[in-house]
Image: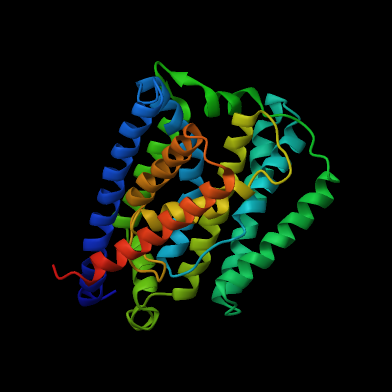
Length: 324
C-alpha cells in the first residue's frame, strides 16, 4: 500500500476515533457516580469489577464486529454462531474435562466455518453483508436445532467455568482475558500490515485494490475472525451460565454493534479502534445496571438504549465535520 494511502487512512481515524470514546468514557464516569448516588455500594470496587466482568462477554463478542465494521460491513449472524458454539461445546464435552480440546475444536471450527462462508458470500458473491449474515444466522439456527434436537445437553467443563467466573486475587479472570485480547487486537489493527489493509478496504476499496491489496481476501479473513470471536464468546458465556441454552446469543447482537458505534467506529468503514469498543461495551453494561436500579420498564430501557446509539452517531458526525 502506498505511503499516501496509508497517510490518508491514519488521518481519517485520528479525530472521531479518539474524541468519541473519550466522550463515552466521561459519560461512563458520570453513570458510575449517578449509580453510586442511587444505590449504596454501586460504585464500590467489588461491584465495579462485577460489572466489568459482565462487560467482558459483550466486549469479546464485539471484537469481530469491530473488525468487520472497519471494512464497511456488519455481521448479524453472531447470535446463533454464539449459541451454536455453546451447544456444540457442551454437547461434545458433556462437562468432561478430558474432552475439552475436542469440544473447543468442534465449537470453534463450526464458528470459524460460519465466518468463512459469510466472508466468501460478501467478497466473492457480492451479497450485501446484511442479507448474507442474516441468512447465515438462520442457517446456523437450523443447524443448531438439528444438532441439539431442540434440547441442548451437557454442561461447561470446570476449566471454562474457572475462566468465566474465577479470580486471580481480587481480579476476575474473564476481565484479564478480555484485556489481553484487547491488547492483541489493538496491536494487530494498528501495528501490522493486515490491520492497515482492513482500514484501507473500509476507507476506499478502489484505491486499496489499486494499491495492491487483495480486498476479497481481507474481507474473508475479517468475517472469519468475527465468526471465531462469536465462538469464543459462546464458550466463555457457557462457563458463566454453566450450561448452554437456545437463544443465548440473541442478547449480544445489537449491543455488540452498539458498543462498536459508541466507541467511534464508522459504520461506513475505514475509521475506528477496538479501544473505543472496549469503552463502549463497559458503558452499555453500566447503563443497563443503572436503568435496572431506577426500575425503568424494559420497553423504556429499549427506547433509552436506542436514543443513546442515535446520539453516538450524531456525536461521531459532529467530530467528523469539525475542523482539526
